[in-house]
Amino acid sequence: MTAHPTPRPSRRERPAKPALTRDGIIETAVALLRAEGLQRVTMRRLAQELDTGPASLYVYVRNTAELHAAVLDDLLGAVDLSPAGEDGDWRERLVRVLDSYTAVMFEYPGLARSALVARPSGEHYLDLLEALLSLLSDGGVPEDLAAWAVDLLLQFATATAAEHAAGDKSPADTEGEWAALAAALRGASDERHPHIAQLGAELLSGPGEARLNWGFHVLINGVLHTPRPRTSTPDAPGTP
Image: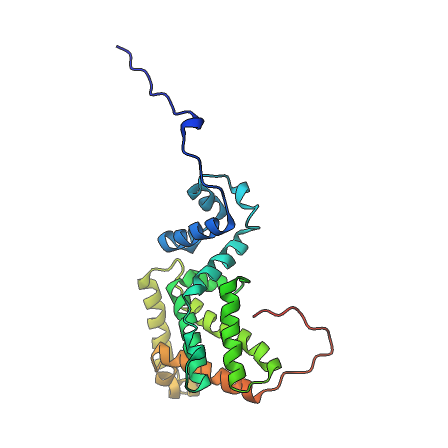
């Protein structure tokens, strides 16, 4: 007896797909990031997850760069901005907010690399800028310096996280690279590289957290004592 193929359900019998929205697209992209990594957060993969065509997504998100910026803004909601309202030295409160931001970047190192060129503009990013500017104001930092300082501080935090992103490298490859650098610094020639030979151990000293916080304080103290240069040409759009 010949088996008959099972009839495919009519489109009318299938459950209706949820309507596409920008918030829904970003929510799905964040879930993909957490499950599969940033390299898989593409328009094509996202369209597959949402059971639609890539062209449909461009109505809500112009390109992959804008998608990644929106994902970054969503994740910035996890940054702890509460130190901005606590008592204590404004520098320490500022560093705690920056530490929290850096921790988010370390959790998603691929996103940290993207964040070096992404331009988030959502509410969470604006909340972060507001908190940093408020703390700089508490410290008496002039407004023009504060406006440039937030860019510098966030770039340092983001670049630090991006530097430690392994990318496609295996943990063994990353560890091997650091071991090779350490060996090169410790074995530097007294004649050709006398300063490296003398400071080889110091160049590698200190835990990452201590070096990061020291860097923040260097930048903050430098902002207080470094006036902005005078420009004779119209200012370019800011990049905080």
